[in-house]
Image (cartoon, rainbow, N blue to C red; front, side, top):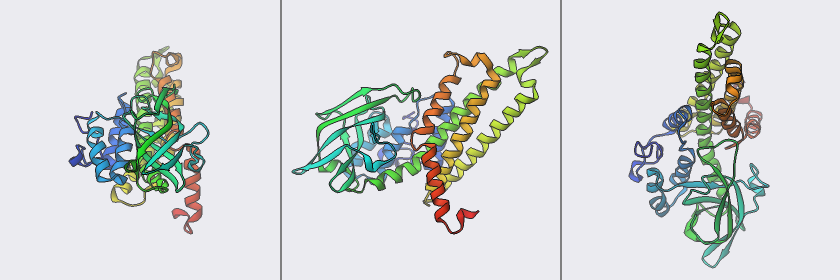
Length: 332
């Protein structure tokens, strides 16, 4: 994938990337989920942080390896007692001379065991601050966790015990990490939405192939009108969600504020994917209840993405807030 430019899909060619934009990113994320390939989502997200906020030295140090797939990245944000509420993070960063010392525990870290660098969000005296921390530094450790989804990008806890980093490790400015977080996650929601669509497309397509062959008396499963309606409804939901995703990607590509569009795209993708993966069991029946078949794993991947990268509830809160603050109610 890296040799084809897919891992560095939005990274400039000068750093070894493909140089694409949000629409290309969406195509890659959807296709990897549809065809059961390892998603570059975490790597693309890391490169986006660096392209938007990194210094020249940080870009030169990390981007070529990340785009080539030889340097693995993770994001250490969530904690055991803090997820969406970044102001409640307990990981701390304090100045010691010209350096910083980081202490804390992070959870839900995709590629936490495998990564060579992780982006740590910590509370400093100045406020929330982001740090690029090399995983081989003294005091950095990780332990594997076992999420129900994310099987190809496994999760871990990461522990930072008196980890000393130079001032050059700060991404952006001290106390200004909220800006780095939202600018990247407003785009990475597109990858989440695309993965949801890809997983659901795979589930529906494989269920239809099975149902076409499965005979019930003198008919096949797909010969029943009730089943045909399920197929039509799921296809329509996925199609509508993909249109919202495409619109959001084009808004982001133009450089306009994509926050509402990407939130709406992920919300609709969650709705469509959950509807689809639940309904496919009507097509496959008991055949779909075994670990040797794909639908249970796809269900867990979709449930994971319902929460990861911005939960459905957080998205709904953001959408309602944007509608209610607008005198025109966002066009209602």
